[in-house]
Image (tube, rainbow, N blue to C red; front, side, top):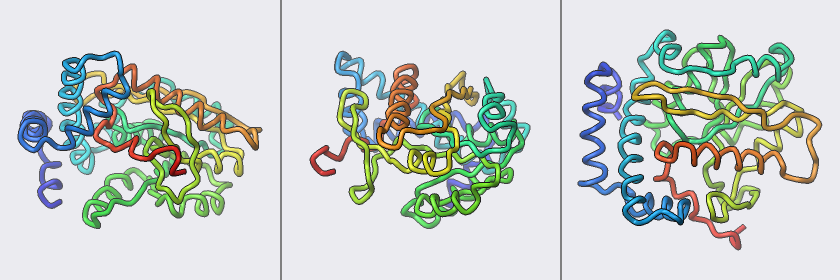
Length: 283
């Protein structure tokens, strides 16, 4: 972790040559989760040939290496850096859905592009408090570093285990509540099963439960990679009160938005995650 912190201090002209070397080591030497990545890609794009899947996998590893070092760099970037490198296409949708910044908004996103930079780009552009809901990492040192990254510019990370209680306690305060909700829930958590990229997959119901309880509007944030070190964020409306108390239309809409974003830019999603490790009968 000490080395990772040090790498974050490198200027961008040195960071990206190092990212290329990291890609070569990850893909050709270590073979980091290569079988998982190719299996995920083959299942998500069944019409692609083995060669096409390999080409896409290599593109993923190149971007994966770059984003990993960019996240380390985020600890030492200032507000100007993020405003220059993250373009927010339609920030006015926040004001529209929140009634002029009077009601909190839930923002759902996925592990695509640079999701950490996207959060800071939104916070620095709007100048409003942003609370990312996160799942603590197994490594205490890595978790501590990521909390430092996510706590910048007035943001206040909230552990997923404390999120519902924290949000309800502060429901009258205006905040942007950000959740990266595309990971697989653990077995003990209540899940919603649906088709996702041609396979059955479980999704968290936490955001949907919070939205129903609070009446907060929900947006989807899509991150696109414009070029190396530069990203674009676009907001889409997912739902607003009153919500259906029975159907899972909000979560279903999120999944369909996620699929559309992934198909638009497949190489920049987190294919190394064991997203389809659970089987439907385990639920």
